[in-house]
Image 1: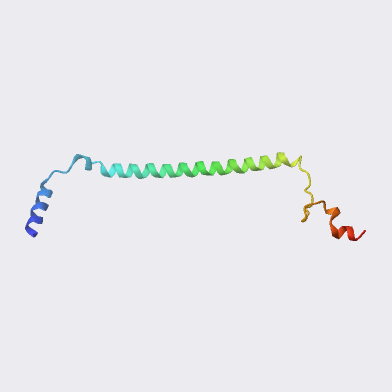
Image 2: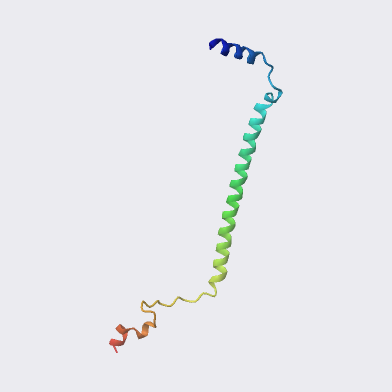
Length: 91
């Protein structure tokens, strides 16, 4: 068994290095740099999106604020609170 393994390893060592492996390190570092730029771009776009959403919300809130009407008190029985039994008893 060891002789067959040693024989195959000797054959593998004698083979020439493929040309595609020469540029492997440069390709790996280029891919790492590209991914880092992509992440930075995503963060920048995300920050601008959050800022735009906040600005739109503030602008929408300010422009709607001038025509706001006061809220009416809610009645638990679904009718006008002035006609509630507790208020009619005091009359």
